[in-house]
Length: 351
Length: 274
Image (cartoon, rainbow over all chains, first blue to last red; front, side):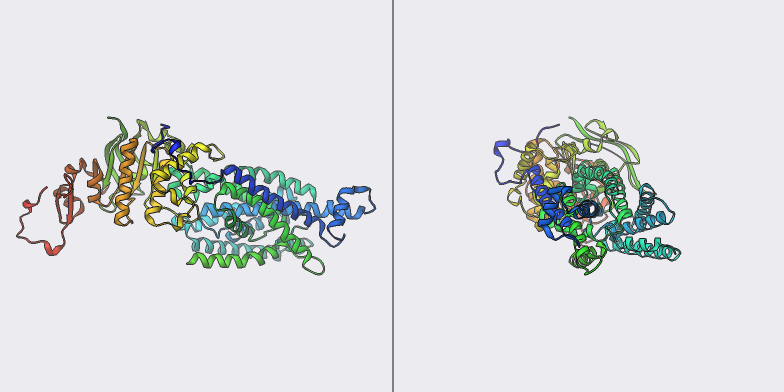
């Protein structure tokens, strides 16, 4: 059974095939992106309304609590550091979410926010907040239920063959989004107390509420999902070849699809319940990384984790520093970058 | 002779619509087996059943002496490879990346290839003559080149059987012959069994050692090309006037379509060779 059906031994193999062995490439790409991420993290914790710049941050970091600058130390470790960590987790999750949906639907425009999955978890989360649940596990669970609900709706609307057509899918996403927006408005209109302001800010995608404990819980929930997706990266490659070819190469399509959908909507709804529906990260990052490193998911999955994290830290940094006073939600920045790219991609794929 | 595919009273239907009815046949190891038949006769469905993509509703199907349903997806993919009619080109994979995907059923859970897998891919690309295209993107290739990439990918699965669904349907003449020659070489040199669905009866007659003609999901005829390709059988199956004679290349059947203007009631049908 293990005979080779082709002519010649290894010695007759031509030398022209010089694909870098996967592990080497994986290592190079990951190292590069981790380097980027570390630099960004450092900027993220250095820049803000207090403290003046990188040099002082370095001094504070290495001198520790003993210095007179205890206040700066506290700001860095208690405020900025958790926020940067949250941004990394959110960016990684949303980028991976985009990557998975794009592979599953064989459509480079698919993304949790555009498909309405984020809004679905948003509704779930708001219901959870209004019901007075704690953020974990209550609100996270209602958010997960919401995202599974929208996924179900999406699949019913674009079932069968049309599933692969990008117009049907995007239109379904638009409809799901409008419906969710209406529901959210309805829920807001019957809310009158102080929770309203929180919900409004959260709705625009906000990272400012992070503390280390919450970030820890989020990490415990998300990191196993990242690992699971790493083991499914070759599966995603096969999915891009279409159902029949993927099956003929030994993939169990049903099991793979269900696993990917459940893991992804779990991840996305979990982050949405923490920081609101931040849009278009899952569109921008997979696209940029695919341009840079090619379409192989075994490279793209780790690249999305590190690259997506970096991107979100940068967006949040912009959101904190661009306004003269106060700050704006990070979701504003990601939308301003993401929407034009979406339009360009849509135009190009129409040709 | 060893049966590599053995079908008994195979049946399949889409909803209420029966597509395959009572098909029984077997394919021997090393066969170049071609299935012909008019559109909608169930050829592609039959191929999908053998590939394990569609589940037959009736009858039994044995692959290499083992019932199809006792294979796992992965182990079936190590015995049977499928070459579809057209290659997908949605995402810009390189030729090498696509060929290496054929190693998937042999890889572990992380899907990482080793030097051995790279060597198998190299030889498959050499065999199909696409080594010079190794770094090109799939969507930059011509239809014939893309088809050879898909064949190299199938070879990488190291299967006993390769299934092809009209691999020459959209190709120019040179590529049609090239693909068919390639499959013949694969069969001759490595005894890989070839099972192909084809529209092109003349091409089938030149390469197949075994032909099966189906219509409406039922078998019309099976056997050597000379036994199946008679004008009575073909006219009955395809419902149009045909002429069958010998190819100038030798002892092969040649089928010619007969346009209406040539049909003259004076011609005695018995003058046509059978």
